[in-house]
Image (cartoon, rainbow over all chains, first blue to last red; front, side, top):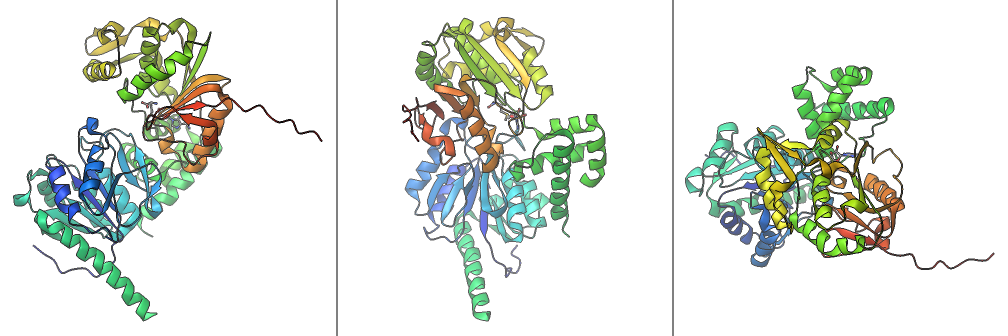
Length: 207
Length: 283
Ligand SMILES: C[S@@+](CC[C@H](N)C(=O)[O-])C[C@H]1O[C@@H](n2cnc3c(N)ncnc32)[C@H](O)[C@@H]1O
């Protein structure tokens, strides 16, 4: 189900995950190097009580920096930003992160739909959207917007997902660029990020 | 031109028009959220494009009203962030008890859940008689709900949990009566509340205050507007008074920050310092 790789720069990654999210995020984020050249924004549906615990846990485990997103902070490369419990995470022009307490979207707050839609508006075709394991259908509509803006669509293989609903709903709505098992997500992201570095180099040489 | 680029231009024109005609200024709101709200409002309206809507919005106050309701985010709950209320109870209430009269301003009170939460807390601390709550919001329609104090019964279970986690001393059901699927808040709670329409973006201050609550409102504002609003609050808050923000909002890096101390880490309760005695400059 692979389509020919696109020659295009990627400036940011957004990830949406629900049931099974802690394990899935561990697998993906632990495999990203501290020098990963893109910012990564994540919506994980977690219990509101767990607060910023997940960010701290992942930060301890991973070499890439993981933190909870603060209002109006600018997303920088080599950093993973988790949506705080009970707040939507949004991306503004220029990669500025904002939070909102708008009503739940797709039964979720934070909602991957909100993150993906705003990130797609901010990054246009230079965005990679990733949907991982989870119950429900959050993220599918957001992923559709990523696709519409020309971004890259990545979905965890439903057979491989702890909970296949979110990947399936996404695949029903959007034609993916990549459908991969969890263990290959990080290497794919590194490859996509590398494409962008490579691409930039080519441009510099051309000048 | 791409559709989304066109939409952004139309939205800018519309918000500029709204500011000029109605005096409501949404031009310094963070775009991602307001864009989502305007998009939603448009798709629920009879207009195909914002350009088409603009003529009606600017000429018909009723259409503007529906836009205003559509783009303000009035989501609230009782004892939201119970831990915040717990710290407020433990660390702010003792100061309030030392004052003969306490004026509290809830800016951006939405449908009033926060006002009732606070009224309950003050009653339990024996402060009800001595306090007045000024609850304001930009959106007049939500103030009507706040005044009535009638909420969905189905939410009360969650609010009861919040209340207990916030250190509530009684039984939450003492504070409302159930009628069909409604929960009607005890009318005594609203006795010391004053509701008024007020815009943080365009209106002046609200007199001297001992405490200002402005939770989950500033996250929607760009830094420039946030700066203005914090200056407005600072002009109202008495020395030794308190500013309470939402758990994801801070005054770090803002002009007024140097005049406040944060009571506890990550709770967003700030206490205004007493001014150092001013040195008189003789010329
Ligand atoms: C998300 S609600 C917050 C409610 C409550 N404070 C809480 O934390 O649960 C935000 C409220 O701010 C109000 N608001 C937005 N812009 C405003 C402005 N410029 N002046 C006054 N209120 C405003 C909205 O109408 C809305 O009711």
